Image (cartoon, helix red, strand yellow):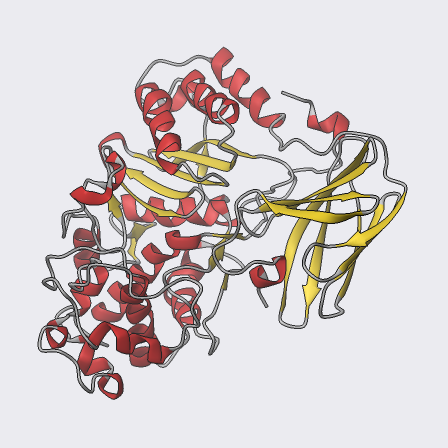
Length: 468
C-alpha cells in the first residue's frame, strides 16, 4: 500500500457529521478481530472491487472507518438504489402521522392517471409498492426514458400480468409512486419531509436528491449522503427506530420493513434470492439496502453490527462474498491491539492510485463528448459542448487535487490526477460526489479517448450527475 501522505495532497481531516455523536472504540475492545476487517479490505483491493469507504459499528460504537483518498468523509455520494430504503422510511412516518395507509389503493392517490386501469391494477396497494410486488413482471420504467409523475400511468394501463402482493419485479415506478404519495399527502418535497422528521434528528447534514423531469425527487435513486449518514441511519434501523431514548421511526414500519414480504428466488445471485422486504433485500446474513456499483447499508442484528460501504464495482455479489468470508467470522473472535494497529495503518494509507508519469506539457484536444480540453502543465480547462468552462488544478507526480465543476443546473465534486506516458497524456477524474470515475487520454492527431470505468445510470456525461 502506497503512503498517500508522501504522494498526495489529499487529507481526511473532515469528519463524518452523523457519526460524531457515536462512541469510538477499537475492534479488539468491541470483540472483533481487526485482521478480519483488514483481510476484507485487502481482498477487495486485490480483486479490483474499489470500495471507496467503509464504516463498521458494533453495539452502537464505531470501531472501524476509512475512506480511500481522494474520497473524504465529507463527500456526499450518490447512493443509487440505496435511496429506496430512505423513501420507505418516509412512507412509514407518513402512515404513522395518518397521512395515508399501507392498504390505500394506488389508484386512489393517482385518480387522474387511472383512466382505463385494469381490474388487477386497481387492487395495487401502497404495501405492494413497498415490497416491489405490484404484480408486474418487469421494471416499468427504462432508466434512459424521461420520467414525470404522468409516467405512473404505466403501472395501471394495461396493468400487471401477475398478482399484486405476490409477484416480485424490481420496479423503479413502485418506489417512485411511494415518493409521490409522501409528497402529495404531506405537501412537502420528499427530502424536506425526511430532513424535518428524521435527518435533523440524526445529525445528517447537507443532503441532495436528483430529480425527475419536473424536479421531483426520484425516490428510487438519486439521494446523496455521506457514508457516516448511511451508517447512522442503518444503526437506527438496528436499534428499532430509537435514538437516545426517542422513537424516530414508527414501530409498525420497523417490524414490517425488515421481514420478507415476497420471494425473490429467481434473482440468480444468492444474496438477491433471499426475499424482499419494504425497499430492502433479505440476505444470507441479516438484511440490507443497496445501490448500483456497490453502495451498501447492512444490518446484522444477530451480531449487533451495522456496516456502511460505498464503492465502484459491477460484481456486487463478489463484494458480499468477501465480506461474509472475512468480516463475519471476525465478529466475536478475539482480536488484539497489534491487529487494531495493522488495520489503522492500512486505512491510513488507503487511496485510489493516481496517474503516474511525467508532468503534462501543453496539450489540447477534444473531450470525446463534443467539447474541448486544454492542458497547460498542472492546469486543465474543460469547455463542454454547451460552452460551459471549468478550470481545475491537476494532481501530478502521483497525486490528486480536489475541485468542483459547476454548470447552471448544479455541480459535481471531482478529484483529478494526470501524467504523460510516451506521447499520451492521461487524465483520471474521480467524481467524488458519486461512485464514478473516468479517464481522458489525449494523443497527437488522434481523437481523445473518453472512458468511464463504469458508465453512470443517469446519463452519459459528468454534467448529468450534477446536483443543485
